[in-house]
Length: 58
Image 1 (cartoon, rainbow, N blue to C red):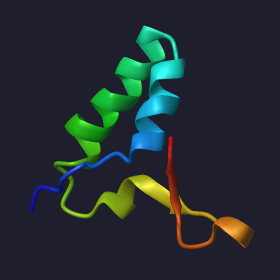
Image 2 (cartoon, rainbow, N blue to C red):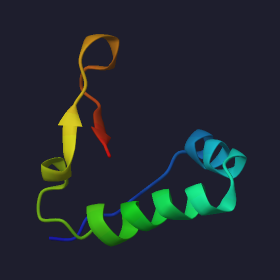
Image 3 (spheres, helix red, strand yellow):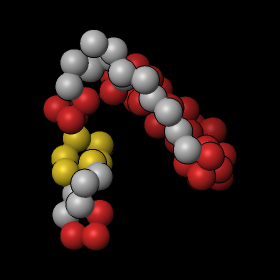
Image 4 (cartoon, rainbow, N blue to C red):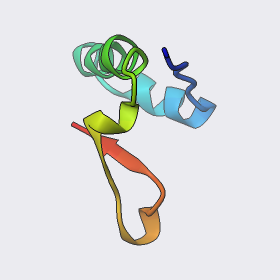
């Protein structure tokens, strides 16, 4: 099942602050790898502490 990638306005603003190459790499990863994955959590790792409930992907 494909997933939809929705960015909050704050995330879009943060992406706009990055240089073009880094921004493109992040957006490409989100759409080409994460959105089409059967289980997107397979590509990430759960965070701990005050960020528990969120995931990181490298």
